[in-house]
Length: 495
Ligand code: MN
Image (cartoon, rainbow, N blue to C red; front, side):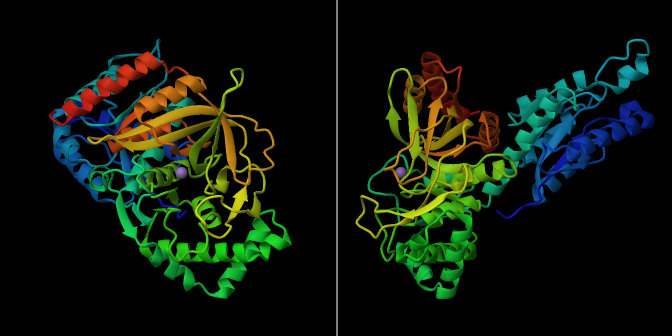
């Protein structure tokens, strides 16, 4: 994935009342905190210190500058002293970049024996940040509030999580998705209103006939195919018979053609559909797997929402341990003592979640009537993970998230696809019922790098609904939340 260099601007509010000396100290303290955040490994982007803001003009100017800066992915605001919030109204109502309100204090402890009125005048976040919070709430400004000392690891981690979500939301603002073929058959959940998606999420979904892709594939020179097959041999476990097979050569040709097409068009995500493979010899399996590993979003069967979500989750997880992949709830193990979900897809699971070197093989598909496609086969490492599904509810987009444990999978010698076995939180019965009540799709984006907080921050920044199915999920309460949300999102338009 192309590394973008995003910045977050650290802005501190104050006013002139305190005098020059205090303001100098405010400036110095703010700089120290901004530098600490910038240096922190938990924050994966640059944190840029901005001079302390003491009037409405300066605040409005910085908000407009943030809007116009392609590098700026958000503001981190802190009120070291009291900053009367009427002067924030003009700027905040114009700001269109993500906002985090950092409710911190420079000193961790109260200096009991030295504390005097000068100290009290300087260290006022406890009330200054409440004034700022009021105006944000009064203006219905979406923001994340992180409270705690700036040297507290959990506090900085929470800021880091938000910066990842903000970068993904900014990346989505220029999200072009190539849809090769339309949505498959009459599947409902993979569809949705693309105009709404562009209004709300900036997604541009561009439709192409599969012939356009087939043409790009036909232009790939044999030399490039040869080089790619050699690369497969280096990266995967593959027999010489498989590597010299026409299927693998064809898979390489499809990969190169697809990659050229996506790069030329500036696409960040794409979909395919095995119902419509006009002009393609086999369903793109290996090509899709490798493109996902390089950071492209993907959704099968025309599922552009999952494709876009996967891209955003790829951006959020950059540099973190654990992979992120397109996924589908495939089949269940319903032994009452050991319930589990087997997740897989026909072919298209991203090798970023593989444990060890993937195996490259060629097998028949079973449906579709096309040539046998090449695919990578692997298992996934054990541990915590999350799946997310984006659905369109007619009046809004809803993100459904389920936390889980990936568990050990017995050998399945006759199943030649990549797969994951997991136990959803709080248990399979509750998780599956909640998911179905919420209208969650069979397609998801799966990640071992992200957690529910990343997705919540992303949903909040993007202005979409999120419902969480975790270890605390209770069906009765969950159903109430769905009903209340229906009401909220209906009324919210009028607010
Ligand atoms: Mn599917």
